[in-house]
Amino acid sequence: MFTYKEKIKSYSKHMTILNLIKTWLFCCGHYVVTITAKPLIYVHKVFCIVFAGVVAETIFVKGNVSFFILGIEYILSVTLSLMFGHEYLSRFYRAIKINDVMMGIKKESIFDDVIRIILFIFLTVRISLTCLEIYFQSGFEYQMSCVCITVVSSNMICMIISIILYTCYVRMRLLRRRFEEITIPVNIINEVGAMCKVREVRRCLQHYHNLLDIMKDIDREFKYLVNIFKPSRFL
Image 1 (tube, rainbow, N blue to C red):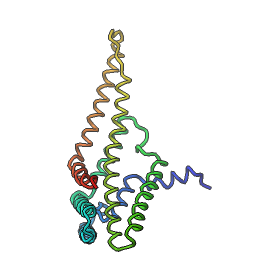
Image 2 (cartoon, rainbow, N blue to C red):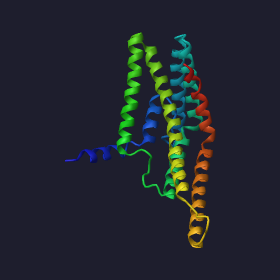
Image 3 (cartoon, helix red, strand yellow):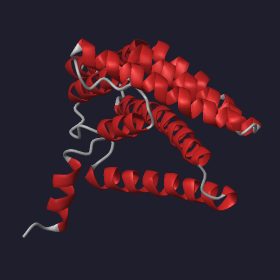
Image 4 (cartoon, rainbow, N blue to C red):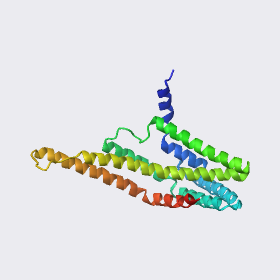
């Protein structure tokens, strides 16, 4: 018999944050790099274009300003996925893991097993409540299913931005603590001890520059993502 902790660990191995995000995006009609065969890639991209066009057209027919903004945001986010395939997420994830090893962070992710389960449940409940609210306000319509897709897509964009920023924040906070722990007395007596402190400062600065390089690597995609997300915040 498996214990509760063993079950959580078994499920969480296949339920990483990256896989959860890609699964939700795929369900929303975004292009996600999952295959390498060019014919299948073209078929997948054509499907995403057609799917996004049908959803957007249905949203625009509603004639509501809020729905119109959601539709524009959805089209732009799908276009962004067609351009980059959300590959920047994989690059960011791999670079952070390498940097964590260099920084001496034992955990591979800022989220442990239990937090990943809680995050998955929270996202599912939030999206379900949103869809139910739309259903009870307008009754079941084909258009409402399209609205739900755009809402889920918008929530996923928000989640991606939050994870990227929070990941960097956690590591910046760790570096700040390490800098605060480095103290060099005014009257330097032990030269060897002082040099150890200097090397630690240089090491922390190197980790800081590595984080900046990681963000610089995804800077273009991240800027597009933030600019796409901005208009719907005024709804």
